Length: 218
Image (cartoon, rainbow, N blue to C red; front, side, top):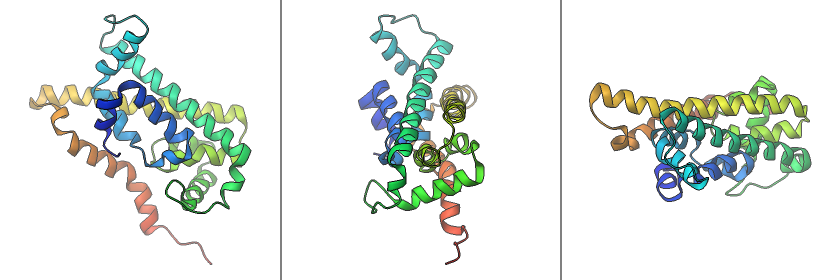
């Protein structure tokens, strides 16, 4: 379930959109491959954008930039809606989550970490959290729990989601082109290594906090 190619090959664009929504719209989505999935989506941007163009009867009109804009727009929309659902979930029943028991889909410590992250960074946490696995799943819920202003949340939600999606998708697309031109090989043939690097880089802050973070005084 952590291999983004599985979702790209067997689910295509629609699975990609569902995962991006679920990672923040459904608190159980923290285990889904967000960053690496978007990076790989950038490599396959033409194929994914063509799925949408075919569905709306505009197949064949796409080009490199249009495909990227279409893909980034659709994914951004899914992420924005997902965060909004998480925010409203937090406003309605979020406080009760602190009394839930841990299970496979929910770990209270993740909620606590997101809460601490929000306390430290305020509204900017909604933007920063987009680039942090696990934290991005719970950050909008915490924003809802603490009663963040709706308009303020909407602004940070849109800004953070667009920044995250565009940076990841465009990085995947243009790095693939650059590597092919400079070194003559396809990143598509070495995705396992790329995915491992992305996972290590994006989870490093979370792992550092878990391993070396200061323990709260008892």
